[in-house]
Length: 406
Ligand SMILES: *Cc1c(COP(=O)(O)O)cnc(C)c1O
Image 1 (spheres, rainbow, N blue to C red):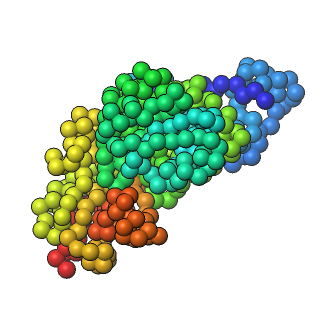
Image 2 (image 1 turned 120 degrees about the horizontal axis):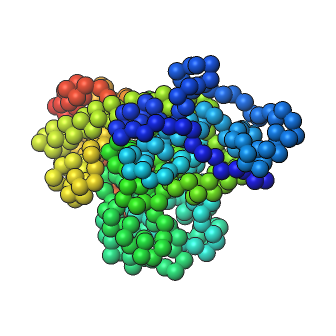
Image 3 (image 1 turned 30 degrees about the vertical axis):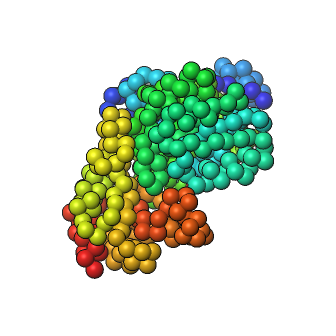
């Protein structure tokens, strides 16, 4: 079945993130003259006559056909995300919304990697992405190499004739390392390899990898883009032909985003710039406070001059993001007790919403491992990841201060 290539809905040209976040991707006049894009709950779409159906197949009209291939509410969210990621660059972009961030990653990988191909990943990347390579992609005959973050020589050395993709996160979790985008793009282009950045921790407010020549950007929209800890979604953004190919793959794999989630995402996106600005400020203030405190051994935040990627972060990013990782001066139990004394952040995995969240990676994502196994993957028992929400900075700091003096 042939799906005509769709053009994005008429969208206004804006140069600022907030204008883009509030207006981009929606037709100026919407159904029923509503100010919001209606949530279109329809599993299928009807044709007046067979002639109408043929017109659709021949690409003479743009419309929906069946829910797995597209939905107007989802398309509006996709167009807004594409506009945000392109920024004022004018680079043509499209977006494919997926059921969650992991589905965005797996759809991209399953669609782009033939048996016998090879992928280079920077270490310190999302645990489930690594697991997908080790298990399912391994079974399908796709190989991968992990290279240390920040080591461009190791990256170039890992390239094989079969290498199809270079994938990195930016900033990484939990150490918030910053990839050298011009360095990666230069190497990848020389070897005709496509580049993918999971920019979930950055958001298009802080950094737009496409402006550096990165081919594909992934976000877990569950985090900052949705921004309210109330939805799961993922997105892949890149040049229109490549996104059209991924959309074909989604038509088979089926990991679509439902219209209600798309509506909530569009709603959340309207305040993206406001939220990220506050979250950047809160995290920087927290990092600066913690690095002077005697009960804290180390602080990992790219906005601190002590961070190994401070220079790269300053050159590439507008803000340094809302997550701060730090090491408490104490063992596993003492660190848990410090976390339990915190009154504002909730103990929970995830990040990016308006509520601050805190976690001890050793007892969250790495609970099943022994202390030795955790150390082998770089996770100390006293490590804390604090994902700032939009609360008032002085309240967050006062809360951390009381928990540290407990
Ligand atoms: C959360 C996260 C994912 C997975 O996204 P889901 O929406 O939870 O499926 C992928 N990458 C990064 C960096 C994440 O933080």
